[in-house]
Length: 203
Length: 257
Image: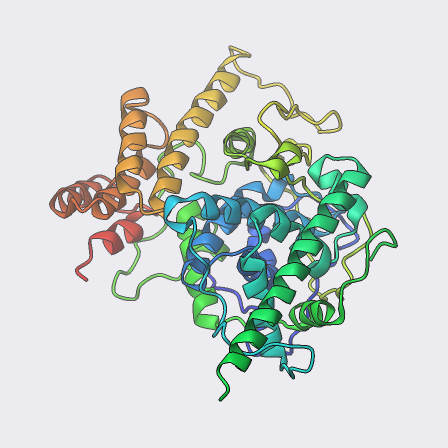
């Protein structure tokens, strides 16, 4: 009997890595789950958060995702990047989460004070940058958010996104352009609002 | 990034960079708790995957299985059902039209790779058929056929060539109901879980997943606020299956808070 496996990122130097495949590639089984969990828990949690799951619900949704992962491990092709495969589960669970009635129209509580002034000269530390990113993502619909997460955060090439979505390549580009446009508009809008409120507050 | 996309403005790029470069440390307690919960849900039976047990509830030696297959882990029986169950709940909307496919061969992610190496292969007694790596979330119309390259298990040497298949189908159907209950329970929908379990009881009164069903029933009753009934069922469960792998979950469900 083993305890829960030590998890990458828990006190260790942060590094984002996939799983190297041994020369003897074989299908995974449930016995491989601890290794997958150990390597990818951080990625799954991060991805769920990026897709809009609130911190308070993260563990429940991650649980659902990993239960599905365990059951589907034999389906995973070890020749492919495991994070692309795991993204699918996170996507599915985050989508279900969003659709649940009590989560609709609620802004995920994943971001700090939204009244922080923001502008081209605003110095932001990385924590605030990340928080602001989540704020902006929260304002997007789920499709646009997912595209941004896939492409601009996970680095999935557009041809692969196209194949994932089952759409022509130019359609994938078109949707991603719209997503990025919405992202930048929301970001700019936050900058304009915060400047307006900052100036309005000054004597 | 592709040349066909306009560059992002510097602030947006900055935000993405900050998020990409950051790897939040995972709280070990959270990791352990989540792992235990997952292990409990899928009822791992191999010793290496058992969830940490409560010290106050010492486990009896491993109980002999009450069903021909280890609950939750018979890949052959699970795989087709799990795919169909997953497909049944596919994401709606524009993205659902194409659904999220399983990974396709492509260049590795930009991030570096861990040195974690999969264990060296060992013979699996199960030798499950290789299910094609189709999308787990493909639209429902895309029924996943058996992979053409999958090694098929040898024909069963039984009196009836159809018997093993019908047993598998029966177990698949049982598993679908039990899983429906489990998913509902994970979402704190105790009443829905109880409905699924009642359906299982009506359809498979002497099914192979009765033990798992009854363990889930205790938990679902607690979730639905029917504590007294849950305690009665828990006592009956303990009496009937004193060495059950589900006993710790049952005890935990009715433990005083």
